[in-house]
Image 1 (cartoon, rainbow, N blue to C red):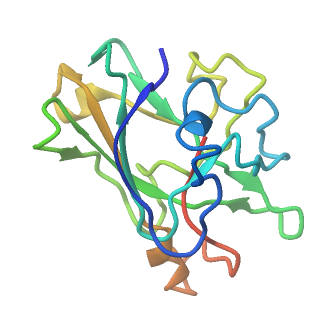
Image 2 (tube, rainbow, N blue to C red):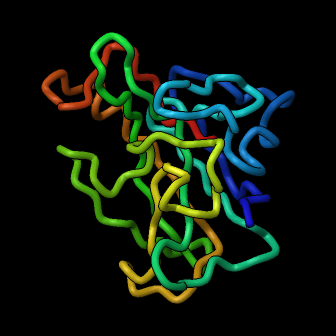
Length: 182
């Protein structure tokens, strides 16, 4: 099951890729880009939506709850790729929060220095089975980590602006522009 509904979207500043009515919201529904990998950066407007610096989107599946099961319960795909110049992963992170009612949100814990726990930190492998978090890439989240049995809402809040503001951050890059939801 994939997301099929945007409950709200507040674009951030800067990058506007995929935000026009011609592409959005269709560009974030369905499976991730089939060509995406650590070696191929998916950057077509029909496939990704840039949140921009500080942007926030709340998504979900209007027909189904996300239920806590064994292991990861959902995966968020972003345009993470290996920089061909320096060989480092190009990461544009976001904080992930979830809710049952769309009012009270619980944030997944994260570490800003390493970006562990954020979305936007692992490449997407679009040719793999997107339902299998062991091979699909992206960043997977387990509701059991928060003590929740189910959710309907997923909030993705870009924090790339904070990485960009800190030239000493491990993942600083002059070309950072904000989380790109695939």
